[in-house]
Image (cartoon, rainbow, N blue to C red; front, side):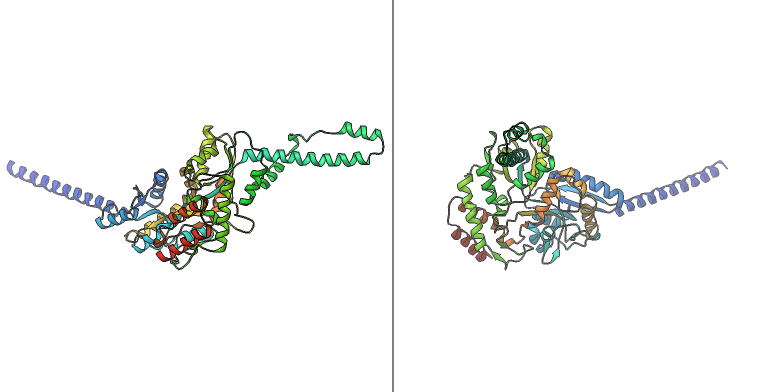
Length: 470
């Protein structure tokens, strides 16, 4: 009887254990299934300053969409080749990545850039300038979501110009008062009237009588609108002792020189992708570069000694009144103001025209979120890229000091708005692989012309060389 009871109890225990094991296995299977179903996309980028921004955006996206986004910082060297290698190995393949617009042709032709779907309808003229849209367009296809940009801006020491404005207003008022006094003296009919005039005479206008509105109006008039205007300003400016140069810029770097010919030459058409459009040697370009050469006679900047960093440092020290900088200067100046190394106010405005008859245009580079053409998560990648430019653009500037390409956001900084305006009229760097060395060749041409070479010979040689190359 006892053996039967033990046998029954053993059967019951084994049955319970079997059931428990089955339930555990089922639970494990369901848990694994949940992890397998959890969607995940990978985004690559090359600039470490974007790390906090992308991490924050990925977290918010996960909270809202329940989709994991993994940002991966990689080297910028051989960037597309790294993506291709990851694609071939199947390890760590990015579903989307951030890249500059000049490499979009290479990315597209290698299959690594797909036409965007723009699910929220964000990449259009309601949110972006024509320059931003042209930058991410190749063969009439939108290949990226414009994220941020770099372009040239005209930077000036606002403190110096404010002081100059006050002095100019005082001089104008005193001159006007002097003329009026002379007229009254000439029309005075008695000695008593002359004595009354002398008693009421004010020797000079007080600076305290000048309003901020008057100073702003005069200051705006003092900012040169053309390169000729800079020369005129330099000839008449009574510079403080701290000022070593009225105008100085990095004449050795094409990015800061390009505005001279930006409105006169055309390489690749409006989208920078048409190898049939090469127009470098023309009359306007010759006139622009001739004036550029003449600037060296006045400002005498050594191409071998000057660098962008050295020029910006001199501007921060108050040694320069005007310079051509890139948009990164805004963030650097704001930091310098906070830590006390920049003791002035600054202003940003449009790059001056070459002359009254010759326009200027800055060069710009747009960094965009691009969808990997081989990604199996193209839909999610498009959605996250759209999310970046639609919902996270306001955070972008505050977290990275880089200016987003969108113009329809209140950035709260007049300098940023001025940079966006300049970007809107800029020339996006072309995408053509056949002309990838054009920038090095143009930089050499600028250096030759700056140091005295024949303008027409240099430009015609460059034009002919690029056309033969294509």
